[in-house]
Image 1 (tube, rainbow, N blue to C red):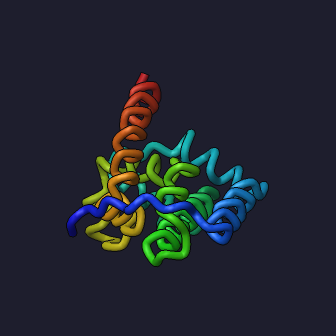
Image 2 (spheres, rainbow, N blue to C red; image 1 turned 90 degrees about the vertical axis):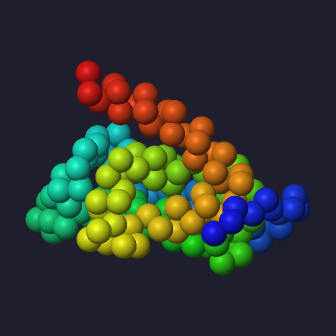
Length: 151
C-alpha cells in the first residue's frame, strides 16, 4: 500500500475528545501497571519468549500483554477508520509505535502464529507519512532501551 501524505487539516473538537479519552484510559491503575511492565520489563528476543507470556493464561503478566497491545491496536484502528485525525493521534502518542519497534525483531515470527499481531499499528506506519516518521524516531529510542537491557 502506498503511504499517504495527509493534507494538513485542523483536528476537530471530536478528535480532541477521543485523544483525551485515550489518555484517561491509559491512566487507569491496572493499565498503568500493565504498560509499565510491557514497556519496561518485557523484552522477548524470540517469538517463543513472547508466547511463553502471551499464550500462557497462568502467567501473571499474560493479561498485561493482551491489554496493552489490544489497547494500542484499538487506538490505531480509530485512526485507520477515520474516527480521529492521524496527525493529532501521532502528535499525542508514541507508545504504540514504541511497541511496534520493540517487537520488530520478532514480528514476522509472531505473525506466523497470529497474522494480525500489531497489524493496525503497522498499517498506520505504512499509510501515513507522519506515523512513519514517528516510528522511525521511536526506533532509535527502542534500540537504546534494548541495549540497556542487554548490559
